[in-house]
Length: 188
Image (tube, rainbow, N blue to C red):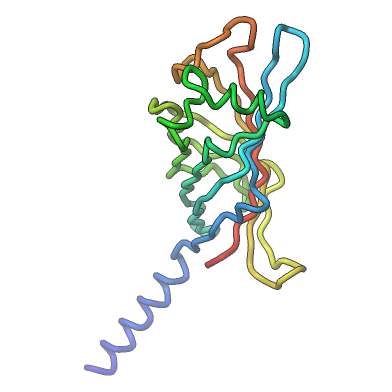
């Protein structure tokens, strides 16, 4: 009886681990968050947040997973020191009071074996709202550089900044903001 019980427990453990989610750490060096916004109805201004971090849990067989992604708002970069300092001020990103913005999702959307979207909660300036992000070019495999298991994709979303209390200069500066983040995440 003991051998049967031990075999049954081992089999259950193997089945459970076959369906366990893998954890991936997002590589901040290759996951810079970029944004675009229209200014005065003429030009498209582009900026980035150069410091990001996060984790992805992914079970491709069960088609489930979760994402936690953090953007360090103090790492904003507009390509000009004056423009960067202006956007960091109170009334805009207010990076002293709100040093991060986050996206958390427990709902990944699949098309076959590929993640194509995620629905979750986005927090900016202390305000949390639901958001759907689109994932393009999702793939998993082995990195040709260091032979590590990885998954990657290009994540994008649009949001109205006014919904998060970032209303300064509307309508001269568009309410609509586009966000794009290339994500490279390595299996732990």
